[in-house]
Image (cartoon, rainbow, N blue to C red; front, side, top):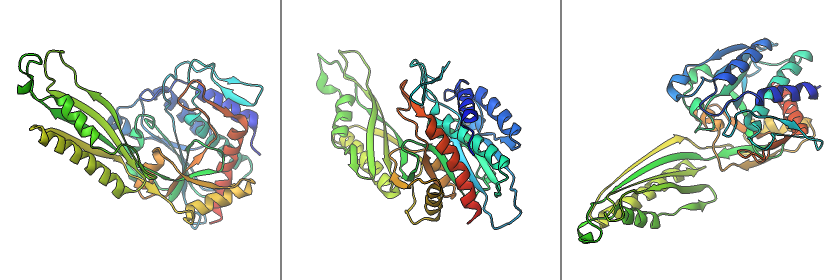
Length: 376
């Protein structure tokens, strides 16, 4: 049913197009043409102006073959951008059945494997005259830079009742049923400058204040559902001057929303108490850039996915992811979405690779999910 050679050729053609995050313009043009050639209605939204990326998101619609109103509209999503180094990718097909780059760049299977699987799935649906409802294929920009494309998307463009992100690590059959919300935090500590050798007691070291604040925080693995991290710490000045300003950037994540909020509050308290003890102030700014999501194994979307996997002889395995994806955004829109593993390995490195057999399985899963949705 799946034409492996066609699928591999499609994947290779996609990864050869440069699309580092922020510079999606070239791949966007290619994807528009390919989805139009497949007979879909393609719209690029206006999120480019909001996200600052090279293109908007693509919403590609495959009309239903069956007028049965009971068949739900569903969607699939993958992102068009990649991490760096992703310019001039030269994919290589190994004798071991894996596709790699030449070792100087990433491969881009994250997430062009998902896009290639969608395209092959569409062709199979058409060739086999498989009945289905309306399907939206949403290809986002800016996922790798913080889900910026999806975050800037207009909810009114989404017609689907539920859907599937093809953008998770793991073996085919793995289902990310939960993922953390994420907060980005900026903290500025104010000190007081003074000569470090002549009268240091007249100064307030912002570096010391910030260090005490960090020492009062719970960081790293907070519990099974929550993490926090200081990503940068910057206090720059002459060696002979008490530093009067430090900027820190941090994040917090949790699968449980109230735990995320509690972690932010605890970090803020640590900063404000350290500043108050030193007789100074700090600025603490936190933004929850995307919310968490969690589906129980008994949820309809999880059960549907499990049934579809079973038709392929695969066993569903649910897990809680530690990272966010566009699935967070669509769940936040009120559209139940799970993130499905596509089999890519060592992503975000020059050792990234994917098995051709996993490309095939992912395309088969697209078709199986469409069939199962039509049977709901």
